Length: 307
Ligand SMILES: NC(=O)c1ccc[n+]([C@@H]2O[C@H](COP(=O)([O-])OP(=O)(O)OC[C@H]3O[C@@H](n4cnc5c(N)ncnc54)[C@H](O)[C@@H]3O)[C@@H](O)[C@H]2O)c1
Image 1: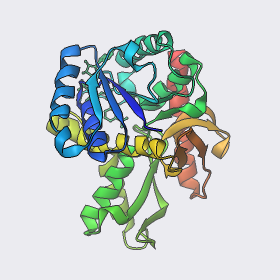
Image 2: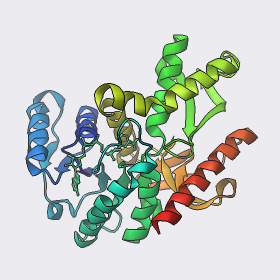
Image 3: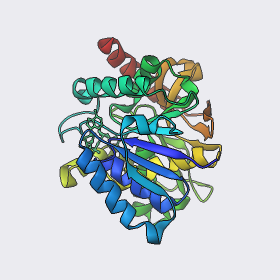
């Protein structure tokens, strides 16, 4: 079944970069861009459309809410970016009211019951949980981008530092997409070989810190993330489109894993056409488990303030 993707916030940097990554991927059939700034959405859609001759036969257009009722994936990238000295959780006051307004529009739009809601706006883990509750949506059909971006940053920075091929480095960031995220060295490998054996503890700390601080670094240097977040979004949408059953560090509602419940955060999660197939509870070092549990506590504390 050809996939129709709607990107709310599609005129912004993250939304338009995601649309470009989806266009280059050539897998989804339709890409509809929505934005309160309709002109911007029209402009981005037009620019993408101009490249269609070299990219593929997709339909790419600016849309209004009624036109996305039949979307298979609704990707929400709308909202403010943080300032260089702000944490993602600091964004909450500004982004929750924008987000609730969007959820209200979606509720009235009569979406398909099996549509997948894919949250990218920050603080992504809190907004993913809000989407489940506010829309009263099946939690298996609500996915947050979670630590996908942090994970690709982590792998790519390890590869750069050690002169390794980035596609062969596998090292997860799990937990919150935010200050409490955890670098997972226990399962980190390059081409099947353990990375912990070839990186000193000091190098491990430096690389994990650089990856976790990369969002702020990119904001300071160019205003905000674009290309890497775009390809991370496309990875998730392609896993859905092709029912790949890929294991990805996306944010989803936890259901007893590592003793946690209710909050949304990132664990290795099987993603396919139905959305979240299951989140895995893999063997981790005790300090990694407690790192993820700290994320759950921080996210629950923010949620309580919100409620
Ligand atoms: N989860 C992640 O890994 C990740 C990574 C990078 C950025 N983000 C988040 O993505 C969001 C967008 O970042 P950006 O750099 O694209 O910002 P941006 O300012 O470039 O784009 C945001 C867009 O949202 C639009 N918008 C605002 N309110 C809207 C509404 N009610 N309906 C429709 N559109 C609306 C704006 O007009 C703008 O075009 C931020 O919250 C940012 O923190 C998340």
